[in-house]
Image (cartoon, rainbow, N blue to C red; front, side, top):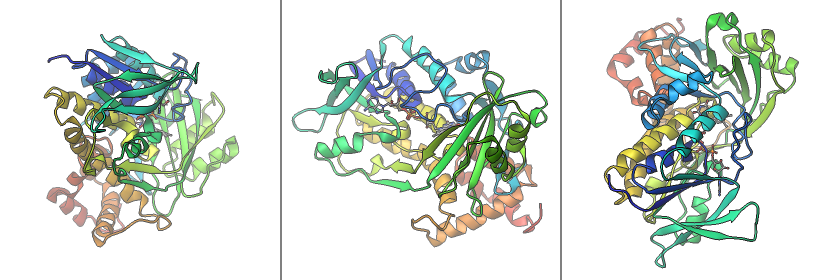
Length: 442
Ligand SMILES: Cc1cc2nc3c(=O)[nH]c(=O)nc-3n(C[C@H](O)[C@H](O)[C@H](O)COP(=O)(O)OP(=O)(O)OC[C@H]3O[C@@H](n4cnc5c(N)ncnc54)[C@H](O)[C@@H]3O)c2cc1C
């Protein structure tokens, strides 16, 4: 592959680091810039408040990460992360239904976001030509006089807020997370507003870590109970490095989980299955509960804009955020970085158009499944077409049938794990199984 120039990545979260890995195939120099001081410490940092909360890599993301950084999975496991078969080691609840586990094995990893980021950062930092710069804000883009080409970024080092500098780049990739400034920067450059859609879910979550012992959950590695109409509560327990379980309980639309032990336990006991409650009730707590709020999920439709400058891309949470309980963001970011590497192998011509189109289809599955579930809450605004109502009714029946049918349960878990598109749930063989299921039977 022919090497060319310099790329700058805004944001050293998972998406930015993995984008840098992809860019290092074709750019001689790649600078990743983050406003936070990037320490090797075990705790989270300001720019990624999701750091302390329960975290897992799904099968689709695990495979993409391994492709980008071979051997990373073994490295994470050597550092204490937990390899899990997402079908059999994790219990999935959808509404009151526990999905029957199916086949084949789906490999995921229970690893905190902080440990994952640290491991990825160490690997990416060691790549030839890659520099990671902390404590530096990207405050804007620079562009060619016609404003149809981004030529670099404007920087403000945290140590000296008077000293704005410029860094030239042949490609700028915004991986600045959900507070991405690209929509505003584009408007300042005279471009149309990027169409976006938000679901005002008003999510609040509380996380606490517990000592994991072999007898917990009968040796299982976790459980996930999603939100569902009729309950504004959800939660998960996931094995993490350091022989710990992370318990995250969450409420939406004004339901706020309490942060004290008794309140947390009562909340956990109201979730289906009992796994989250078992850990809160019986395991040794290792820290104080941490709280976070997540007002909305947002998707930005860059693939729909008519004019877009050359030399600029957006990925990760900056492109689309998902329901945190579905645990998909880092995995989708890995798939996007893998896509970027694939497209760069064919050159940088019309890169933005090619990337946004292909990334839209990556994002579409997890976004539409999450959005479809959220819009079942009547409190949320948003258009519900007759087709959407029909899909929702079918999926209700699907979930009930999946409680007794490993073929249906396994197929749904593969969609959650990003190894099958949601369209698979509507394939004739599965529709026939759902229709054969007697309403109300388990
Ligand atoms: C509670 C919770 C639980 C989650 N659990 C999971 C899970 O189990 N599995 C999973 O896959 N995903 C999970 N996610 C989502 C996941 O954390 C993210 O989707 C993923 O890490 C990708 O984030 P990112 O790199 O795009 O953005 P971020 O992690 O937000 O990183 C953006 C970075 O950009 C920097 N930055 C922003 N603007 C600037 C600027 N102008 N100049 C310089 N630096 C800037 C920030 O400091 C930050 O470091 C969870 C999210 C939440 C909230």
